[in-house]
Length: 483
Image (tube, rainbow, N blue to C red):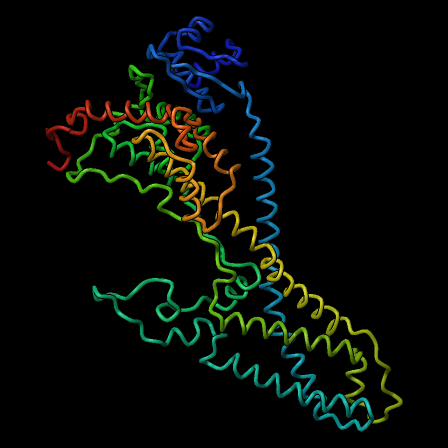
């Protein structure tokens, strides 16, 4: 029987509320064989985030703290929906920004320059026309300088910029150096730098299969034997996530559970050891070897940020000037064509050349300012994650020496984050990993023991010591399609 079918049968036969099950309990309640009942229990554990426990007699107990329900799905679904909405809004905003920048740089700059030139050479001798002409001359000089340093071939505005023309340095191996050095690679296209200026750099896409590859590498490097601590070491996931993950691994890769005489649990995957590699398999790096980093504000060179800010500021100033002078389209045309001051319309509210560019340019400046205001929250989130990984390292390494002190955990947290941890954070991390205060060592200060992890480490090591090297051999080739 397939594990999914056995799980469906067990789900109808068992009442999971507040109790443990043995494989025999499940078999008796459902009428399944012991083999099918065990496979079904593991399938249910994977689907409903169940937990496994071991007794001194070597018996495996299954427990489902949430029953056969998935209360986390509501939170997960809501979070996914909010993420999709946020991604859609972000994508729409990025599109608007890109389109707006194109309009501003290509359309409004040209329009404003044309207005300034026309006003500067206007023959109108009326008071408003003369005053606008002198102001136009000053702004024209400013625009001319901006356009020259923006559009000439060696400007940072150009796609790739001057950096594309710089010779790249060579590495010691003779090839071109790779990295995030401005001189060693072309700059991003201008529209992308604008996108990053307002919304920040896009995070690198995550590989959804990376955690599973790390777990499989850990299994192969551990002679096909692994414990929950090994999975937490490479994935950083909490125990309530790792337990169902192991049940899924057992179903997918033909694993089994072994219980030591002391009650430690080890997982065996002998079929995953088969390999033709002669140098063996390397262990996956631990999660604490990969520090979380606060993303840069823009990811652009400072010259690009200054240029983008100056261009948006120029449009803000120009549109503000148009608003301040009431330069409507009708008034502007009259200033250019009429020689009689009495025929020039009075100042009005310019919409196209005043309100629209002013509001958009102002809002564009608010976006990076809002990101700066929220940057502290990102910094604290990164600090908490790096601190959690440091605490995980201290706990997992303590299984070989009988516990870890509260002072050591706090010191690891301080080194990883640069801030002082609270007692609440330390307690939450200890409880999540199944730790208790070691009362036998109370005279020496607060010390935590993780007996389940200690028993597991001994059980896994014993299984590895007893593992045969023949499991990894594929045998002699007796047939090949190449022959």
